Length: 296
Image (spheres, rainbow, N blue to C red):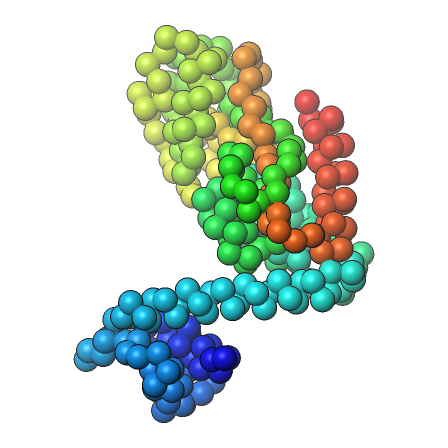
């Protein structure tokens, strides 16, 4: 069996791309990291092609990195299984899109206040990154907007979230000309979301790309700030709108037909959820089933 410290040194070296940075990250000397790599190469053959100030992994080196990832995942599964019965101690990892994340975060903080032994790790990420993080065992729970088809995942319906056309408070929005007058506040998913909603609300209109763009931000919590200041309109998911701190400065322009996305909860199917994760899910499912009824 390969020495775990040698594996940690090699994986950190591959991640950092430098013996100096790897040694700093591991709190070791460069000589120690070099020695660990040398010991591995004595067992496995050449792992690195060394060049001035850089190196390249050989095929054996890339295979060893995959092995390191498998060992890390196995270690995490062991830790989860050994501690899964304790619902009030330990870490819970949850990764989600930004809109639902804004609504989730206060609930996660409230749960941690009620159970100080818990450590809740939450990350905002797009669907692709959520899938990768759950499959790689870096997060126990994930939420996505597109239902995945992967036998390694357990997938269940979590909530529904309509897209909303949001304009400055008091601004009349009756037709396409009003949208042209206001201008569009864009965001990373803005063109796609606006295209889906506006094509239904205004059939036959030129489309969102024809509208003047009056701003862009990639921060989910800031998208509605320029709208509140009268700089334009946007299309965002409902939970992002509900989390905005100045609801009096904006308005939702109602209309039909609606565009509603389903949010899917996923976790690895091969092993049971920890008691901590089950505790978290009970709380947030209860909250979102209530808030959905209130928001519609």
